[in-house]
Amino acid sequence: MMSSYRNHPINDYASVVGPDTQFIDVRQPTEVADGSMPTASNIPLNQLADRLAELDPTQRTVVLCRSGGRSAQAAHFLAGAGFVDVVNLTGGILEFSEGAQR
Image 1 (tube, one colour):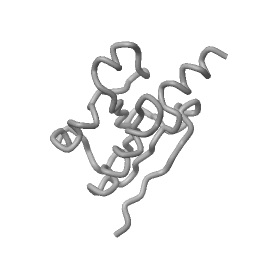
Image 2: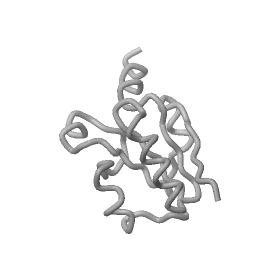
Image 3: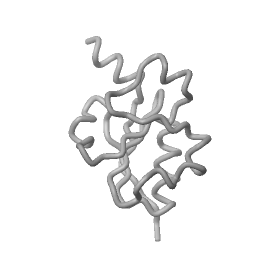
Image 4: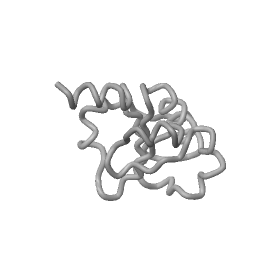
């Protein structure tokens, strides 16, 4: 079976993040300390495989990072691990910050 996830622009994150969504920031804790998204949990990309048991593969899982690269890797990994509804927020926190300042 082909693993798949979808890309979604971060500045429209509210349309894919709901009360039952697992919202994961895959940046390092030092990066998250500079600011993250409301309700996002921090699971750094390099810890994701070891911490899969913390997540429910049947729930929507939305991932973000600084610019969209690491979150795309995380989304690919999660989809390959059998997660049914994976969304990568493109543009990352950088693009979100720029959008918030406009």
